[in-house]
Every structure is written in C-alpha cells, then in structure tokens.
Image 1 (cartoon, rainbow, N blue to C red):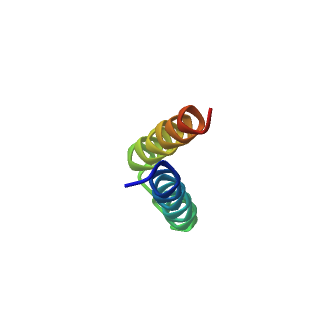
Image 2 (image 1 turned 90 degrees about the vertical axis):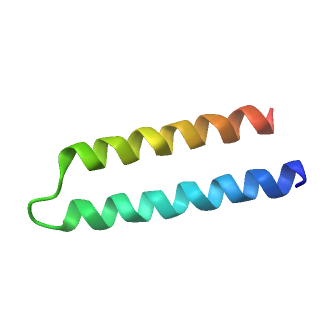
Image 3 (image 1 turned 90 degrees about the horizontal axis):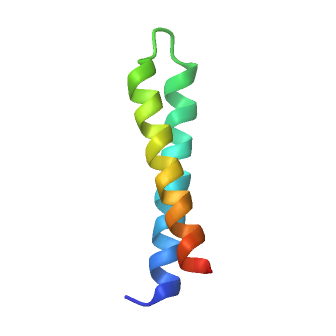
Length: 54
C-alpha cells in the first residue's frame, strides 16, 4: 500500500467516524461513553494522518 493510499484510507475512516458521531449525538439517550470513545479514535486518526503527511 502506498503512503498516499494509506493516508486516504485513514481520512475515509476519520470521515465515517465523524458521521457516526453526529448521528449518535442526534439520538435521544445517546451513550456519552460511546461518543467519547469515538471522538478519541477520531483524534488518534487525525494525529496519525498529520504525522504521515509531514
């Protein structure tokens, strides 16, 4: 896997996770722990993308 395709895959995962977070937050009675966990994963992905780009 090339570096650019790896970065693209990470960006895709980040975007999908972002959409899931938004969807879950709109539901009544959403699980705050689940949302926090997904946000941490989003941050981890973003940091990894940034590291790979530099």
